[in-house]
Each structure stands twice: as C-alpha cells, then as structure tokens.
Image (tube, rainbow, N blue to C red; front, side, top):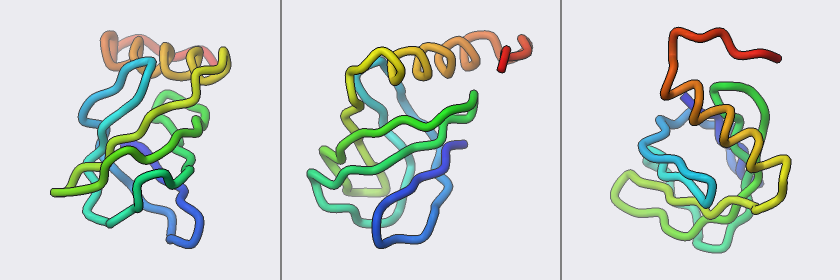
Length: 90
C-alpha cells in the first residue's frame, strides 16, 4: 500500500498495481489532472516525487523523477515485492 500526497487533497492510500524505475500505476478513485506533481510514500520506505500522466477508470499513472535517490527507493520497493520474506534494511 502506498500513501499519496497531492497538493489541495487529503492524504490517500492506494494499491500499487505496477511499478518500474520510470513510473507506476496505482489504484485510485480520485481525479487528478495530468501534469500534477505529487509525492508517493512507498511501502518499503521513502517518498518519491512524480508527475501524473493519466487519471481515469480508477487508475492513476505517474511518471517518476529520474534522479539517483528516486531510483534507489524504487529499486528497494521492487526488491521488497520480489522477496517479501526478507527484512528491508533501513
């Protein structure tokens, strides 16, 4: 489960449906205009920033920043999904 932070909206929880180093798709019923900058708290820890590219039909698609810190946090989350039994280092 991820936590969404969108300016002008209440904090919301969302299910990560798909995630890669370039972006993610989340289950989210709200409407967010394309181009909106937002932050996502990842379940493995850390917060990443991105830009909304699509929001329709209960799906929110986000293009993520391509900096080293974002890449490291997404990689940590991908590893947690691949190996859920492992404890994640802080």
